Length: 217
Length: 222
Image 1 (cartoon, chains in turn brown, yellow):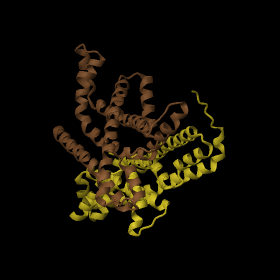
Image 2 (image 1 turned 90 degrees about the horizontal axis):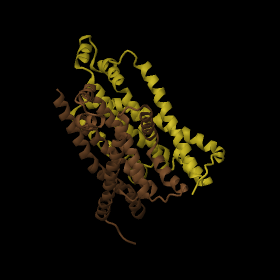
Image 3 (image 1 turned 90 degrees about the vertical axis):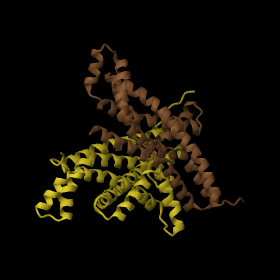
Image 4 (image 1 turned 45 degrees about the vertical axis):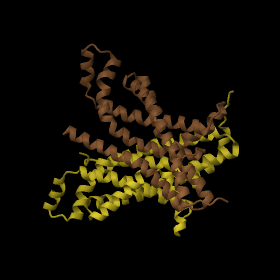
């Protein structure tokens, strides 16, 4: 039997936190890409496509992330697709993140006055050009603060992947608890580690928000 | 490879499903009631209490908001017994959900209180109301009317997040899904069905609470 000192446990947890960070980054980058794509087709205004995006958002925001994970992890193998916890976690978190980001960013695009679109059109720009050169740069200024704030939710949501066997911070803490029977210090440390990852983001989002309101005054 | 869906076998498990539904809704309702009351008290203290109380509340809110719910749940269920606090899975789930919702509610209600203009409480004290009366009858109703939608979406997030309590064997909806698929090996079907139930619940709950909110705060929305 191997003895674990609290130091060993803390060290193992810190190592496991790497996977939480990596998964959060993947979810954010992939989810951001999909979200941007959805945003472009959503604001283009075509009725059917807009409806599709709305349903997509409703579906992913109206169901538990855990269920989405289960559906991908246990469901897809039945359709003949081999699914590892890595793949299931990446796919689900990407879809989940994109559904939130498209909604956040849509609000930012709509915050840009409509006259800006018309002004672009009057300069002879076509729709993609208006979006690329006029609307998105302005929307971006508004979007940074809520996006950073949402990153906190992404980091926290990666904890659920432990349930389908993805070995990140939460899963590692369960394994360590089972080996050492010291749940109190372990889950306490895990909470602190998550806090250490999330709080800087929360703080930064708040700074950005303050700067923004100051600029608007 | 093709797969044929077969939902015919799910009828047998109606009882498990209904029980899961009751547990999920019950936990959500109880934690919402407790979280709303504690959130209002917390927000009142956070905006008018002594400095150390404010610091304490701010620390609590930040700690909860920056850690995942599942870790809070595990901490309550697995961690607290070593301090001598032994909770069964229902109590642990309820405690974790309430603690979680309260933190968000405090933040939301506090923002609402901040949004009520100072003139309102000055006008109240000019009419001879005490500070408590002014808060309860003048500031709070306006604050709640402003933040009601935000509180509502937080309640929905808590309901959907409560799927995790199945991990400490609380027999909620998600537990029912796992139970059913372990019996009939129709995992895709049972998860799809339970996911659909969650979606319908979320939609109904939002409609219902919107209606309640409108009648409760009619005329108070600025």
